[in-house]
Image (cartoon, rainbow, N blue to C red; front, side):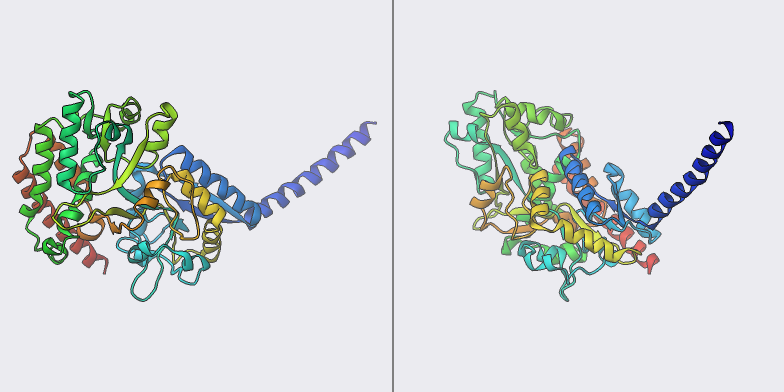
Length: 425
């Protein structure tokens, strides 16, 4: 009996290493696709993870490794670009051509490009036809607003800055100050940066008589022309048309305040509408294009690519990376991602059931202009715009001083960018 047990144990020991080696060999045979994304909410990430798992089931030889670095994303990607060691797939987060273009594989031969929304052509394609990235969704930023409040006071959604100011004053007067006309979450300086960046386009780009594209591009722009936006913001503050705690208010407060009918307008979009509806279904949140500033000009959407998938051109797994993109571009999968992010799909053959679908349909003829800073400002100016807004609202700098500061930083960051570019060459 003792000999039988020893023999049995010996057989087990002989078999187990074989099983272990077989499993190890199978794991080694798998190719790992590393993906970096800027997705920030749980619903977005969870949907992405589920689709990645479904892809793995279809492709037994591939393992998908997802990474969501959060606020460290840009710095991490800069380091990896400098070392020419990028993930197999990565999110270009608005910088597909300008920042990441030289690192991306050309996707023009992929089937989904036939359905690329023309609004994204100038952002994701170059003149020769190269396609830089697959758009998981697309941004159309404007002003989020409380429909209940505008209906209550007989206010039409504003189409011009004059209309907007009139609406804010009417809300303040008729609500006797109980409703905040325009709310900022300025603790996060991106709230102010978004204001400057979004309204800079109708101020300096879209109206032919006030077009500063050339000057902004070649570095000769006079920043005194930017002062208007600080003047307007300061006027809103003086008239108490924005929240008194604009510099310290946090984004986490927005949903609850909007659900309590205490806010009329805000710059925040994304999942705001559906988040508010979950707390108070009676509150109807809508979104409108960014109002025009100059007489005769039209409202516009500010946007372009939001989340994307670009394939690193030097990846050892470029073919597999493109297979993943093709999987994500299937209409059913593209629809899932668009709905998870509450934004329109980047493909014309995908109709997503998103919260603001009716608003986007209503304003479907309104053109989309790229984010101002992505085309006309050097890298680093977004943070400068945000800090400038905080300093203005905190009475640290005047509108004129803000423009002077922006001019200095614009020049410094342009020179820094040119120096870095020369060193890389």
